[in-house]
Amino acid sequence: MHRGSLVTALASWLDARAHDGVWIVRMEDLDEPRCEPGAADAILATLTRLGLHSDEPVVWQSQRHAQYEQALASLIARGLVYPCGCTRREIADSLTRVHARHRTLAYPGTCRHGLHGKTPRAWRLRVPDGEAARIRFEDRWMGPQTQDLATEVGDFVLKRADGQWAYQLAVVVDDQTQGMTDIVRGADLLDSTARQIYLQACLDAPTPRYLHVPLVMADDGEKLSKQNGAAPLVLDTANATLCALKDAAAHLGLPATLTHVSHREDFYAAAIQAWRAQHRQ
Picture (tube, rainbow, N blue to C red):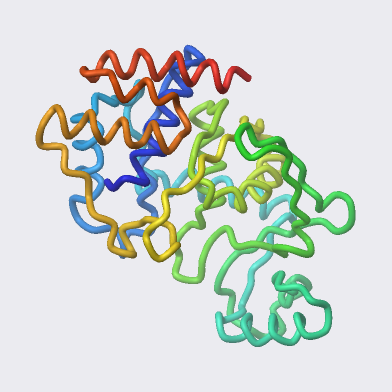
């Protein structure tokens, strides 16, 4: 767990506490080949050291394949998805041609009306055309958002060619199952939200409220992440833990007065009040 993931964890925890809600931890470990052994347990251990405890049992997406399969089956039965036989190379070549003609990089719907002799590789959700494709929502941090799924995204993947479930399907199913009312996450996922809102409608699922917090950036201007070498948090003392929390609070724009707090529990009490004042809605 690095500085950027702490910012998101703290923001979501504060939002739950400020609204008298419950804070739910979910391990999104679907891409099992890329998940390092022990990494998820290390995250949970770090949260424990921070005093951030899930109010419900932790859900592991890698144990929920049956639920995702059921959701996909319902979409297939209603004709809302179709098999896609395109390889990555074919999609890239097609996008290059389409972009040259129409200035768009959306998936062009090559397999929408049939596989044309190709072997099925993935499942895609059909997106509508025209006004129905324009998804509008109010982000509690970023403000009004609009995305045209037809021109900006195209029919998007729900199950990948390697058999792995796409993030979009998994989180929508889990948000519905867990009764999520508010989603607080990093701004790198803002672009995924319109797709999830449309998929929620297809699955007759309610749409939660969204709040996307600003990302912590590395020195090279890229998002701070494990992939680009972000250093893990070192919380070997109470002071180190408190300093990490204060740093995260500062990134979230919480008052500088929090820097004067000398105990973790006092920090949390003051931070909840500050968050409530800034994010009442």
